[in-house]
Image (cartoon, rainbow, N blue to C red; front, side, top):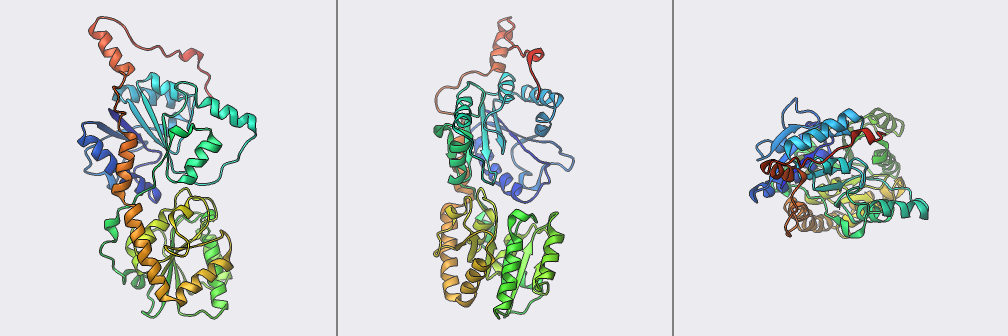
Length: 411
């Protein structure tokens, strides 16, 4: 098998893409050990392979998959790369479960298409006719992905019930994180970064500065706690994005700018987390998974998160964390007040959360499950069109598949 991991973004993209690369590295290394070839394709490799993949036994190529979705020329170039690289398994992240492009990829030699869905958000459910059409499209030979991997049961149900993916093709594999990063916690780093006294309790949150991440709800909860007379608490937010100026302005307007610290984007969130007394994941939309939740659990920090998307699958409410409604600052403030006022309860919750993270969300467990999904089926594989072409050449025949470009309607 020759698998191409077609990345959506440039090699230096951060945030969740770092975790995606880390998971893929572990999975790909096992594939290589078993004799398979692995190539990672990025739209740009100007800075070389990303740090998460340096030293991995992979090939790297400049493969601009996003361009294949934007123009006929980009699609033709991508198909040429598939043929040149002799790719027979194409692994895509956050791409459609069916596409008119997929038969063209198969004509270029791809035998198996795998789509890994990590996207957040609800999907609009259409009427019976549209739903039936979606289901039918997934049964057209070659038109849909062979396997759809979901990062949570929430996403798996969405794939089946909204996208129309046949249930037998939708597989849930929870994300995994590198638990070793939390093995030697430094509980002073965050406090030093904030410059607060030892007696100050710290509430921590991280993620992109976007409205749907709900940090504005945390700011409002901080104002409520201050208004209720809860003192000696500092709030720290690590993240950057276009919404950051609005968040700063909200903190000033709410009268908490002096206790709400903006740290900017940090690549060392896993090092900051152990210094927190409580972690908050205040997302407003339906998170596909909730990496920030699992990282807090692994760091041994009690977490308060919103009851949305895949997050309730990660947290056992009242035992490994606390769930609150999204966009409800009063509920969030109440949950924070309970943990801040009950350190024994917080410690017990944190211990149970860390154990659950080790048991359920290790990088090794995730990579092992992904390997089982991605590795070729045990039955004898059919030769690809490229292998058939090679055999035909040996016999003096022209067995190349035709690609009737004149009849293709580009949209």
